[in-house]
Length: 102
Image (cartoon, rainbow, N blue to C red):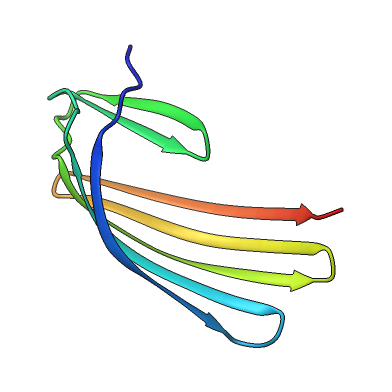
C-alpha cells in the first residue's frame, strides 16, 4: 500500500480570544484529492494513518471544525471536533490533548 497523498486545500480559519487564557478556533476548508485511487482513501490524523478501501470515496470534500484551547502557566489543554464530508462519506473526529511546556 502507498501512503502517497496529494490534496488541494483552500479555506478559512478564525481564532477568537474569549479571555486571556481561553481561545476558540473555527475552520472550514474545501479539499480535492488528486492522487487517490478510485477505490481507496488515505486518512492521516496527527501521524496515525489508515486506509478506507472500497466505496469509491468522492475526491471533493468539505472539512469544518471547532476547538477550544485553555492556557494556564505551562499547561495547554485542547479539545476539538472535526467533520469531513464527501457526497458519499462522512467522518467525525474528536480530540483531547494536554501539553506541558518545560
